[in-house]
Image 1: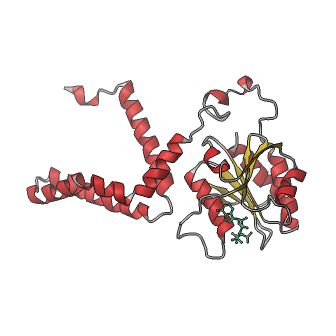
Image 2 (image 1 turned 90 degrees about the vertical axis):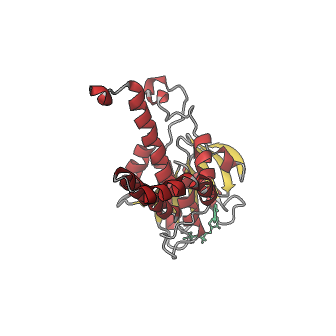
Length: 258
Ligand SMILES: Nc1ncnc2c1ncn2[C@@H]1O[C@H](COP(=O)(O)OP(=O)(O)OP(=O)(O)O)[C@@H](O)[C@H]1O
């Protein structure tokens, strides 16, 4: 009689996987017009289920057919998002040091692999004073090799001088973004995907859109120095992270990179 409340390990795993899937879909669609389509579909789905429960045959049949046959239409409508989703899944770097197994600190053998956030923040602060535009992408668990290939690969241990020289206005490397993996600059002049979010205020140009774009599509975080205002922005999950002092920025960055 109590069959329906039997709950196995696989059920728990099932729920967990659905939750992860929904989280990734939400992350992908957040800030885009596609979220409104998803809400529309969810409403139609809810109405369909209600009409089915109330045994309103005709309406439930119509809605059922509409939703059932709509899979192909959905693939067409969400072509871009499906592409991004597969890209995100395919580029998850399971061997990254922040992955589950390597969270165990004592297993860490790589010397200098922990990102020196103080250096990043100090370099941004120096560039902010001289209004030097900069765009620094810091890799987390998603592998950014597909972006590195758009720029010039490099392998230099990070320090303030290197970062400031890269973004120095007359440097041949200053254009585009720089990618940091572990404690190394691994690429410069990288072209990032631009966010098409309608929520970004028009005063922000391509540098900001690129930082928002890459953090929407991957779990990387970005530090950005505006050439116009000298303002330092910290961007995560496609959004500006607010902070008041340099120390607070450093703490937030450190926590996100743990
Ligand atoms: N897709 C991209 N990927 C990486 N870097 C980019 C991209 N698009 C633009 N940039 C960088 O941003 C610079 C142009 O910034 P733009 O003035 O449009 O941005 P902004 O957001 O207004 O920033 P700022 O406040 O620094 O002016 C370019 O010179 C280039 O270095």
